[in-house]
Image (cartoon, rainbow, N blue to C red; front, top):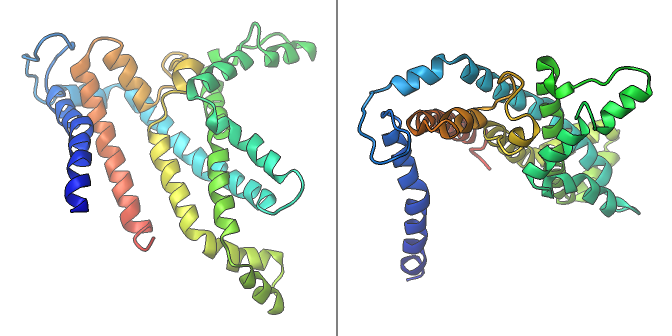
Length: 281
């Protein structure tokens, strides 16, 4: 009776807001459609071919891979290191946790605008500091080689606090008697970390990596206010590419094709990761 009462409304909402939009996107992706009226110009799979052959889309895909790499190699180790420092109970621990977690609470658009001001070559504090050192003002966000580095920096700053809190929760759930047993056996701090902390923290690390992977493929809100995909389309992600070249240019059919490609990638990554790394969690 409980299932009969609660499942149908949830299933209806899921169908209305998830299944139907997915089906519509797949349908629109095979049309040359600007979003006005009914799609009528069927072009088969040319939208997909154009997207996959577009150098900006390939650059956006590479940028997403860079975000994934930095998230796994920098953001998560940093989050774990901070969690190890702040998991204990000491004066100021709660304050430090909140300081590092606050960027995650901050809206992505607001974070992008704040960092755009910081990196602004004319009025930003970083530019003023560079000029105070005796160097001319430098427009970092206008440099193709450094713009993507600023994006990666902001993403690490924005999201590492979330993973830190996950690790802190995992560390606080570890049975203290395991560390006592390790100490009795003569284990030092590194051996306790390697043989006790990491294995016990394994499920939390795997879920953290899952969130980092899926989130890295969907980065959008930070990109638009920070760089807008520039300079010269060098900092686009796949979602910002979809918005700029699909929705922004009234090419809804093309944007739908990009959305389908992104959906397939996310499904492959999510289910593949859960199948191979989270089978026992």
